[in-house]
Image (cartoon, rainbow over all chains, first blue to last red; front, side):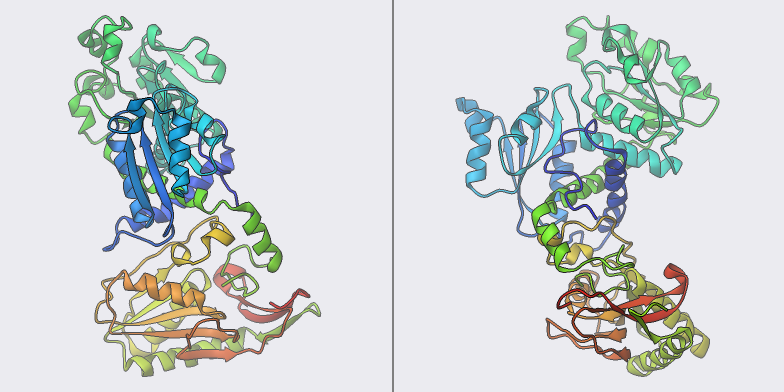
Length: 337
Length: 184
């Protein structure tokens, strides 16, 4: 059994193996049940201190992480860029080192610059979890999307999943593409040329120029948020025009040859990238994504918290695994009870 | 049978032990009115299921049963690292006022039972909790004792008890295994 199952940090899905991704999804399953208990809390991370360091606005992700941490009994502190010494010009590493001097165990970081999570992870001892870094990755969103697809369809392999909208600026899209491809899904992208990264096909994804083609092809549409400031910068002519050409509407879904699953990472712009009737309709698993987000984040926190390889190796040496000790408590008492 | 594995209970002996345990559970709980059987993942769950079925045959009533995975209540996440896959926890109903019988395969240090007691407390306030194990191998590290025991087993250093059940391992057996290792 490998103990440091995810390594020290969770930076992105590009780095994870298919087995590691499956491990997180499988570990998330029992955590779903914890949130349904009368007392929604287990002591697994008792005594751990986790800092949520958010340099960018976030409601869903921050609250989801906070619920996950609290339901695992960790102690949490939220630091926002505004109102902290970051405003006085302190560097990120100084901020983090000061936090470490107060004996923290993990940092969850959201930052507008790509690569910040890795930069930080290389400079502090605490586990670092990327909660979205610039246009790079948002791994826990990718994982919760995978879990939601697996819940709905019973599998990921062989499914056709299309990301619709602003792929260029989307870290959610990148994490989705890596995760889906690694688990054997076919991935499509669909959106205006101005919002598609050049050479996207080289990742092994199909490119659709018209939403109608994507609807015809896909089992799942993951509709990305159109950031409204994109219009000001000239990526799209107008929101109305975008909705007319790329909006996911009831009329378009009615022409789909099979029943589509509709996902959206939030926050939604109703009437821009998605029709309200679709968002609230029977195809939508958007709120399931939110529920799964807490379970996936609990799984990630739990797996990273246990990652003390040297201690685990010592414990393993103390009790050599027997032929049946694939499960811990299994029938064997050679393993620690 | 290889020389380093000794059978303690074969399938028939295991079946007899379970029948006796089922009767003892009924006596201890004075019938089935408030009885809930909770098996500890993984083999405890199968054993609880069997005991519940034996009671059903005897008494003609359905006994509520559940499963408990105590992984998240362990006290050694730091040293052992996370368990790869956590089993299901399924509690049939509010446990308040019930007589809960915890069922596990082997009782050793008592740490699993300690964790199970903590976890059960988060599901209600049973009027009583009892402990029923197939094998008591001694070696307690906590003040925890079983109420019902299938068989006590004396285990020396370098030996281990394996419980095998049909549902998971393909056959029913309890074995003493020489690991040749150190004090465990």
